[in-house]
Image (cartoon, rainbow, N blue to C red; front, side):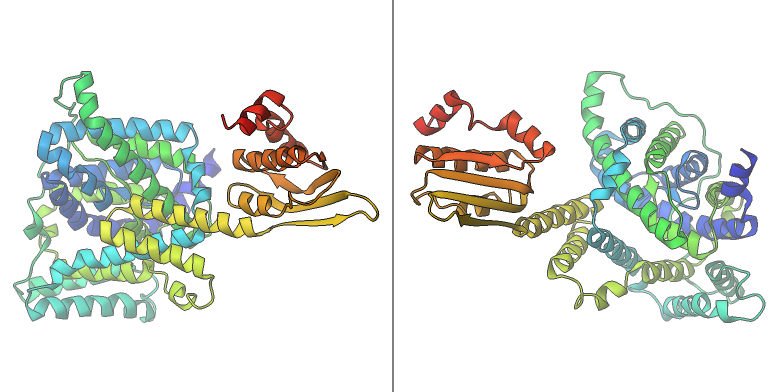
Length: 496
């Protein structure tokens, strides 16, 4: 037990504390911005980010991953807040948490195995583009000071690691934020700061039960939003967990992460916060800054609250240009540049899946829709590809009217027409043998195709034998096949 705690919490104390500091600073403007998107007071997003980060540090299944209020979730709350107000948002947040806990217990996280690498790459690239696009309002219609400080910030981020002695010991994003803030204050530069984003809270969060009627009508109002929030939150969380797994060469417990996200959202709703999920941008910042354990997530959440409540005057003076530089670094680091080089090498179907995922996510700003389109396209391409790996060969025995058809490959909905077309029903035969020892029948469509073949040959007066069927295929065929059921065959032949 002690070794387990050390392995997840205290094996990288210095790196986790420094990385958590960078993440806490970067969370402030994002939490405020996401609150504005959702149409609520900035403190709702800040309280949510604090609460979710702290709870997920203990309850989550992926050490080093950052969870807080996110833009993907905020976009789904707009209509609910506009039509019904904050109290219904808090109630929806509680229900979102309950649904996510339920998803964890039914092992919904295991569905991630159906998300192909192409979809994952498209998701990552789209998110990198959205992160960059989110910085553009801070870079339009501004003075030259903003561009100069952003460029200087990027210079510090990418060049500081090469400084002897201290370059590898301090996270360059933290150095960027401190340096740019010092320059802005020292030279009294008139530039947009964190305080311009909205008023920071000046009190600790308190327990707050949503002030809504506890009846079926309330459930009807919040349920559609909660289902959407739960699905998008889990989807983004599972994707982020996979990315952090790759970055750190470690594994995560996705089902525990689902339950942890649910517990964190319930806690957020009870403390006046909105629903949230894992943040790929902040998680990448954490990992790139040296964060690996649960301590980095906990410290980021605690420090965030301390800073906005007790150090609000100083935090409010951080120039947005410094944080923009950090987020541009995140978008550059998040984007899979290798995917561009691989466009010529990878199959065209994989490229279409990746590019479609990117396009849909960027156009809709909805990660769930983009990933759904990518998974759907990947499934269709896969079915088409596997469907082509099916062949039917035949030979006729000398001096007899007995033909043997040998089926090789997978017979299912995508290959059933090819399977049917391989048989010659006009040939005059006395006996037909269908050898399926190297084939597999997967679904109702394949069983129906086999029924048609057998029934049509029998209608022509042939004796039909099916040989070599494996146990799994036999189970499906025996359960759903009708070629040995005279009454069902009569219905088929009669057109009923």
